Amino acid sequence: VIRSGKDEDLINPIITGHFGASLVHLANISYRLGGRSLKFDKEKEKFINDPEADKLLTRPYRAPFIVPDKV
Image 1 (cartoon, helix red, strand yellow):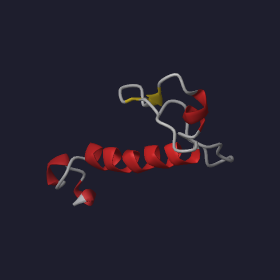
Image 2 (image 1 turned 45 degrees about the vertical axis):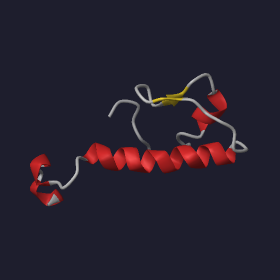
Image 3 (image 1 turned 135 degrees about the vertical axis):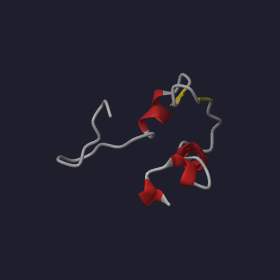
């Protein structure tokens, strides 16, 4: 189904998978920060006023396996 390249062939939209995986990652970040409550801005995909939590949203990559700033 994915090989067809047609969105209409998918059972669920790709964004559904993104949201499902994101929930688990956000829970892990909260756990790593001592289980404290976090507020997340879903539009910006960043935590609200929490740079420590924002650092856990990604990790440093090693060259040449980098993710460009603009994809």
